[in-house]
Image (cartoon, rainbow, N blue to C red; front, side, top):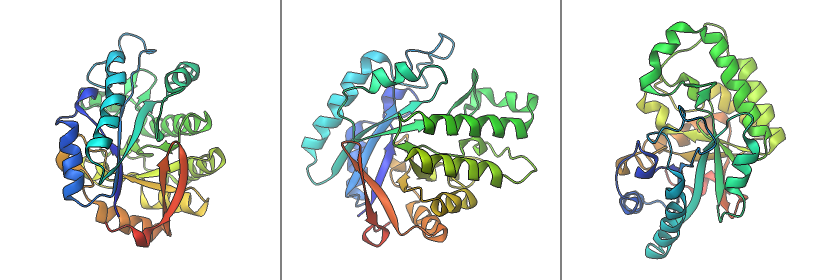
Length: 272
């Protein structure tokens, strides 16, 4: 069986394709289980951050939930899970909790895309890297990542070293930051995502790095797999490399979710 829990939809403003096309691609690639986890509304943000190209609008969210449910009935041969990816914005934890309250979700991804008001993973804001100390950027990013895990809002930490997306890396070793995050994830009871999208950007490697993932495994942090697909063709893309990285890091099981309850399945049962 194959599992891809990180699949977006056109509702977020920067993905393309019908949701049914993503399911058809999942079927074609032999996925037994998949999950939509589109960017949830960011209605609590200031107007300059409420970008319709970054996340779905508030009025789209109920429709998104309904369509995932409907697709589950249309495709009974694929386990279609309902998830959401929600940005962590310090100071707005209560608003995020209200958004998630009572929803029939299978899992929630927590992600960090903003350092202050800077969308550091946006191609439109690349010039900001030239104005900042990269060591400090990494320190701020990992502090936010750990802060997100500690909120208790999330089940999975998405693309956990996303800050490397455009290939910017500090000269110093990152072991200390990786270990800080791995221990925080373990304490908070969240999973680490093995996300293949980094291979499609200048970073040129999976999120997280091999060292980071090994430390997560050493600290007992469960792992899940995701493609971060923003088009149907990217569903489960490069998952054979994700499997190799998981095995290299020492993982023998991956996490599956339903109704925000986690169980572990042996990797030997998963055919990537």
